[in-house]
Length: 154
Image (cartoon, rainbow, N blue to C red; front, side):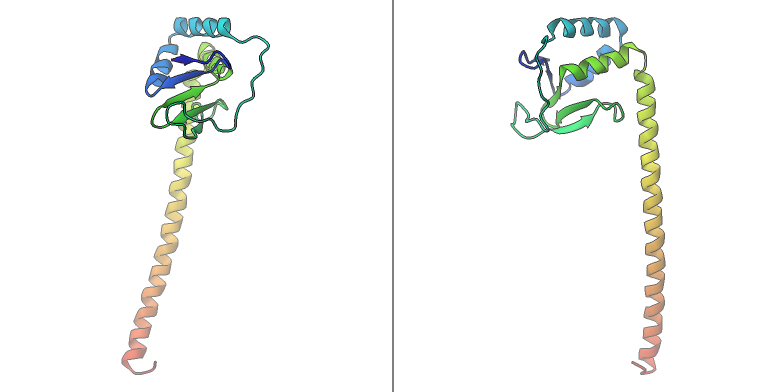
């Protein structure tokens, strides 16, 4: 992990965020990380969060992700190179883990994704039903048109 001494954020190279996530599930590691981040904290230094950050590797704008989809903790991600997290956001993540709410948050996020997928599936099924109805109408129209054509009524 690379630490920014200006703003206190941390850059995780690709794959390191997963290692971080796996490590902080351990309560002792989580507490040590919280203590370390607080010790490194930039006291009385206010930093404004940029709307979108550029990847320090490729200089392209990174996408913003909501940590565990429903936490309201924003992290920035470059799909090719890694993840950026503000120090304040890392402390919020660690607080969630320390409080024992991480598993519950994962379950809520999974439930939310499942509900969203079910909603999308219902919408797709509704669209398919509409398309089937329209196809049936077109087929009937084609049959009528064929008959009228056959008898010379067109």
